[in-house]
Length: 137
Length: 69
Image (cartoon, rainbow over all chains, first blue to last red):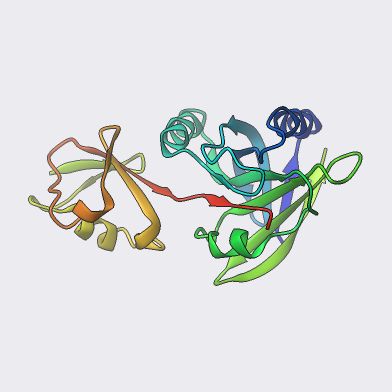
């Protein structure tokens, strides 16, 4: 089972980013290192949501390109992305699954429907969803 | 010719198109990949006709999106 490690300080930054984006969904990228089945998130990229929607998000390609270059400069690899669900649980929606094109990525969903907010990690391979163990450390 | 593809410098045949590079690099879900050459994004409908040149820096970016519904 894939384990994703996320620093508490980065989790808090993601929550703040999600709250500042309300009522819309917020999103970003995660990068770090992979050791076997353990993915350690070393950097979180808090990006804009060009969709400006409470129900949809997309990563702006230009911001994505800038982030990918920064990852490479820091010796990190892309680990996936995250987005917030302002009002629904931390689970992949049908749209999330349909648009999960990278089988190696971890897809993190932060829900603001819980108090305090919670986050979960998923993998998607060929439309099949697997829950990944997420440790906030 | 030498190209930098997703950060790695490699040798490729002259006259290589973006479409052929996508095939050679076994890009996952090629229909949904965004390609930049030297920081300029290439329209997806032009991959077949866009020819790469010595020293080009190519990035493949996966579309990332979704929603809570």
